[in-house]
Amino acid sequence: MAESIRKVNVIGHLNPDTDSICSAISYAYLKNALGPKIFEPRRCGNINRETAFVLKRWGAEEPELITSVRPQIKDLEYQKQKGINGEMSLYAAWNLMREEHQDTLCITDENEDLRGLVTVKDIANANMAIFDTDVLATARTSYRNVIETLNGEMVLGNPDDVITSGRVFVGTSPEMMEDTIEEGDIVLVTNRYETQHYAVGSGAACLIICCDAPVTRALKSSAEHHGCRIITTPYDTYAATRLICMSMPVRSIMLDHDLVEFSVNTTVEDVRKVMSSTRHRFFPVINEEGHFDGVITSANLFDIKRKHVILVDHNEVSQAVDGLSHAIILEIIDHHRIGSIETSAPALFRNQPVGCTCTIVKQMYDENGVTPPPHIAGLMLSAILSDTLTFRSPTCTDQDRIAAQELAGIVGVDIDAYADEMFEAGADLTGRTADEVFHGDFKVFSRGSARFGVGQGSYMTETSRRAAEDLLRPYLADAAKNEDLPIILYMFTDVKTQTTDLLYYGEGAEAVIKAAFGVEPEEGMAVLPGVVSRKKQMIPPLMNAFERLSEE
Image 1 (tube, rainbow, N blue to C red):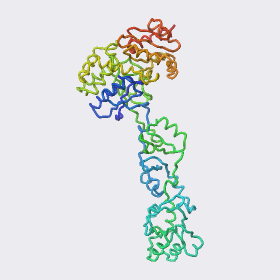
Image 2: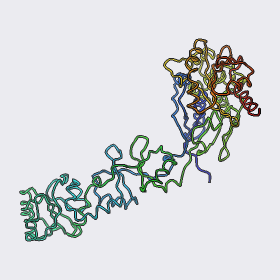
Image 3: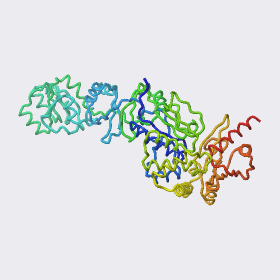
């Protein structure tokens, strides 16, 4: 039986541009309109300034960042569990473990933050501390815990008082208790009148009367006079003696240091590595808000639910989010050349030779009889204008123009005026670093053994283009090192003159550019009139040049 579909991440490419973000949002909206609302747009990089302008202009939220689609703890069926109060008695914790069939309990505070954990083994070891007669005082045990553990009743005293001193002592006879009982001790007795009174008179802090023996008026009066508490229990002295140490709070024995815990966002791979290097069996899980959520064991790692994804605006592994091979690809909606992505099962693959992914998405709205609301229409229009450079790019088709005009009609904007406003916002360098500008629209490509990166920026004025060049020229060497690429290129595209100044860096880059475009670069720059499209006019000639040069 095929795995049921859960939440689906609709994701564009790394270093997302306007089309990558807007197509993810728009397509997720369409899918949710047609079926269950399980489709969520995502981004796998920071948005550029142009895209930020578009989102703000149309009142759309920035998609949530996703850095990997590798299976995480949140994709597993781990043991959901509520934390216990640190004041819970060992006895109550033991019973809870038996009822819930759990070997480990986690202790949390009032905010559900993890404070420690206790295991069955810890409780068993504590139960063996029968010769440590002051354990209740050391643990600062409340009398309420003692009452609950012994199934007792407090006849005299405050259950919320805490044991801070004294030992646990079994009272047999006054003769045997002489010079033994000290002030502040807890004394277990039966119904022997003289033993009860001797313990009270010796300064006992609490008298525990076993077998539900009656409490006489005289005993109660004497105990009240001496400040001694009285608890009755149905258990005999033997059982009560064995049980009473189990009234200690779990915080007194919990492991509260060097805890090995996992976030729900921890990858399964990392969990396996940690589990293989530790003797622990159970590990606390912390949710995305930082609170305790449950526990996980190695057995939970066998039933992995892979993430479901839809890819938009790309179909190359080099441009995809990390861990794509570990996810289930349901659909690919793209307008680029067919790349290197493989799927583990059949998937819807819609690839059309148009200028923008949002043009395809608009067609899918039409095919399903869905009219996009104004904010979605505005996003799709922005993407089409961005990718086609307001219809100036050779990648632009009649389908792009028709889609853009229909979308402009929905939102009521002048296409040329809005496009100029959008491109100017994208070219604004105020407060931006070279790294931000460079990665605003950057992609990695490969052909055989050749790997190279190409960034692109669109500029409306010569002034803005020159400012961008001054910022990026000294940065290309760092970019090549950071990206681990032998060759780095950057396209300064003048939208209105339809010319690209190609800045380059790396050994052999100049030879490749000469072979691809037949031009003579000067000072690390090649002027390419009529070249505005990275996809159609830049990458194919470069690929061919790399191939020819490798054969020589």
